[in-house]
Image 1: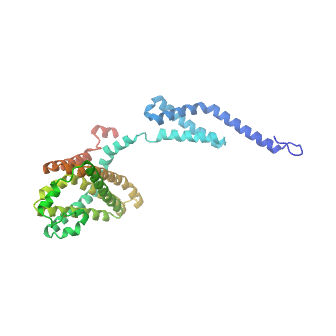
Image 2 (image 1 turned 180 degrees about the vertical axis):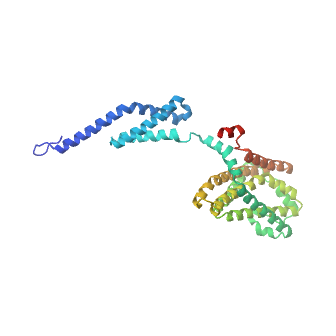
Length: 358
């Protein structure tokens, strides 16, 4: 208590001191009655955080759930009766940690990636028949148009193909020079091949990102950009075919192009899903439709990125090292069969699984 200048006792100070003492005693009593349960919950949560919920036994998991409910009740009471802040902060932290253990998905990064590869991506592809049709249609129409135009008039090649991409491979080049670009020794040095592979991956990734992100504008820009890539492909093939190198360039393109071109078409499909959500939202609002379609669209974009990694490795290494056209065809279309098999069969439930799901 406080004593004033005139020697009298300050009654207000006495009341405040008494209130503080009462709050302290009440907090101590509250903690004493429940602290053992909090410590047990803290130990279980710590073990689950280190080793996952699988590290706990059945009884421990049951005690964890019961302890979490009890801690939440204690936190509610502590807030209602205004106990000390340190106790409330401790209970808030403990309840938040327990919530994550009880309700958050108990899945490692590796498990999440495996689930995405084994089920998520294949199922998203099978749900995207119309967008995939749009993506591959754009590429095929572009390739046919580019081939037809350049076959009839080689000057179209200069319209479709940028000079830096042509790199002296033009309709004016001789057949021997064009053949040398397919089978010639391009310096099979590991450092050069690695740098070339990294460049190809960066270049192709830029194209795929553009195709995917532009799809939100009612799919038209994605379709046109994919169509343009088809034009370049058709123009190149027509140029080599006119020199009698059609089979050779087909094998040269196949070893990496089956994977790379499919990735471009799939990126267009992902963009088309976003564009169709804006154009044809159905019963949903456009915002809801876009959010709904984005789940599968992102999975298609991840698939395209994965395929580009594989294509960059094949184009940067295997295409330079393998000169036999038969082997180039076998590798390229073998990879195509792998992608088709994985995407068609992955994530399908067996009969027993479907019955259990019911």
